[in-house]
Each structure stands twice: as C-alpha cells, then as structure tokens.
Image (tube, rainbow, N blue to C red):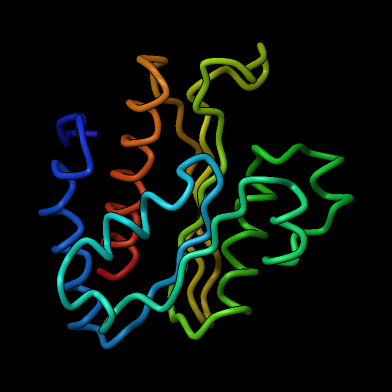
Length: 169
C-alpha cells in the first residue's frame, strides 16, 4: 500500500472525508461491521460533520456471539473456520447489508494482538469484506506487521476506508 501508516484517527480524517464525499456523490449509505477495530471505522467516518448523510450504522461485533446475534453469522461457520477468516468476514459484510439501510458495507475481523495469534493466523492477520446490493462480495486478506495493537487497528481502518473508495469507483 502506498499510503503512509496512520499514527492516529486524526491522520485518517482526510481519507474519511474523501470516502464520505464519494458516498454522497453516489447517493449511497454505508454500514460497518467491526470486530478487531471495535468501531474505529465508523468512528473515523462520523468524526466528520455531515456524515449522517452517508453513514447508516455501525455494528461492533467483537464477540462470536455478537457476530451471530447481530449479523446472522452462523455459529457453526465460526466454529469450523474461526472468527478470523474469509468466510466470516464475508458473512459479516452480507449480514450488515441485510440488517441495515446501507447500500455498501465493510466488515473487518482480525488479530490485533499482542496475543491471540498462531502460526496459521499470526498477529496482524485481518480479513475485510465489502458487500454491495446486487454485487458479489469482495474479500481482502491482509497481514500487517506486528508493530503493536494500535498500529494494526489503524492500518485496518485505513485499508477499510480505501476499500470502500475502490468499491465506489
């Protein structure tokens, strides 16, 4: 990614504003379904005045139970492939699309650390998905260098915002 690594949500404000402008220009609403970022994507967007014209809602689904209850992610899917997976990210994005008034959704699930990683899914592993009405859901698998929890979470927010922009263009 050519974007510089963000050090705070303030660093992401210009990108968040760009996303909101693109959503407004397309006359679309967004919803977020967040696990490892705990609402930071929605927070970055709603920090900008006028965001209510393009942000429908944010789902913070940190626990597996929340993913199932709020987004309809099948519990057996989480047991089979793990919460941090392509399949769960897609199910989260599609669930958010079905349970909101949004035209486009972004979901993130990952391992921000410092613990919780494994050889198969090291700290910094993140799965994102972008769902839109009448389109195939896109998936992005990222691995962010383990430079601390904050760094991984901010890099995830940045990638999610860029992914929304790319999906709109």
